[in-house]
Image (tube, rainbow, N blue to C red; front, side, top):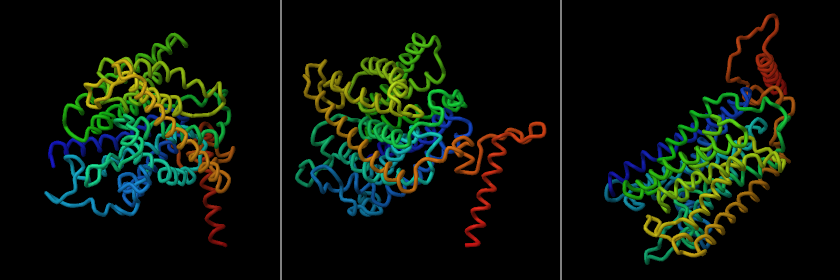
Length: 452
């Protein structure tokens, strides 16, 4: 066990956990004022739900002994984190760090992957239905896919017994281009199709972001936490972490410029929303490639991701799906760009030690990257669509039109994010009136339960 490596991984895990509240600000600022609390609650709900499932059996499903040809870890082997404890020389290790530290680091990846999906269904999803979906999806999709991509275990004889994508196929995904971003982006697209469009989608100007400082604050927290996300994935305080750190600085900086250039040419304005979104697009793209390409190529990847994602977010209007906060355009598209770019620009002298097309490696690596990406995309989309459809047909996934008009914060949580001062002349502000009506509804529902 190396104390420095352990300290770095624990700090990195804390940074990645901070990303989910950062995402809550980022997404919350992009919604309308009457939906910001619900949007933030979806992220905080993911923290609570996924953590419990991860401790109970999720870690074992992802990193337990393989029981299915690289498809799944044994969910009962490390049930309740049994077998990963210990102190001093008796502590089980992953590399040079205690396994219990690795458990924590991987837990926060699972959390933010679920939280990312929520941005596609802003303003219209029941909170209870979202929590049920998140719990089912993380068990059926994220835990197995994490095993496919991140598990590199070997048996006592040194034979590979890890996941079929990372260890078996040889796909390079340093920190989660497939397992996190493509995975979440595909599920987000499926849910957007299941729930349908928001009222007034593409026409109602009130769907614009209500708090751009929140958006930029959230982007800043995401960027800050992403250094733990990528550099922490080295699982050591070493040169690999250093390269990942520099690439995590370079790519989103270039992506911000790429997005703003597209905005300026297309719309005539470079916006704060574009700057924040461009930075996130660059962070998404560099995630799988952080230890496989040079910083110069990271700049190229950033420019490419920023420009392409800026164009991709408009596809929802042309194709007719309502991905509220551009999870598909940024995370799915950005994740694909970053994962496939490895097949082009991977440097054999990098820590990943693989050669892309530009380094004389031919098309083999690019083919592997494409296969891994699209298998995860298809699996996540199909399962998310089926689970979302079943929830929608049984308990209902979408709130009523009346509640959507009044605001999901008031309708679902009986709260509002902002106090507008009560009476305006002799009338109450509409949000205050809606909140009062919801309180009356709750009291009536409680009275009916008591009487029955």
